[in-house]
Image (cartoon, rainbow, N blue to C red; front, side):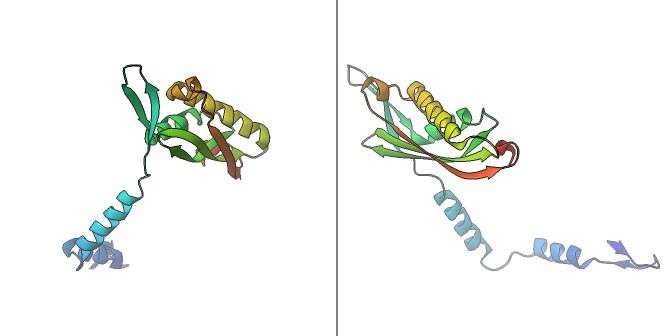
Length: 158
């Protein structure tokens, strides 16, 4: 509560009154709105796809989700201070990884072509460890790198 200039009578701040009123009453339709917001937030979750990582002679298989690939590639691509991934996308056809798209934020002043080459090589190395079936079967995985922003300083901190 605020106090008047004379210091004798307490004056309730209008913001405090509004907060108190909002806390005491639930607006009509609030639960419907909250449910709708949560439904939309859940729908934002990326569609994950299975990628065949290993196939054994006995027919058993190991499948890795693109969600797992996203998390692991994101970690691998944030080690360098000159760039960071903004987004990762995957094209999967019949459980076969066809291509990876990397949207990149780079530091101002770096050679963007060389940086894209480094990112491409790093993604392929990481994928070779995560999905060794690709290399063993002679599959080619395209890695498309798009620089979406250039920032001053360390892009991981932006």
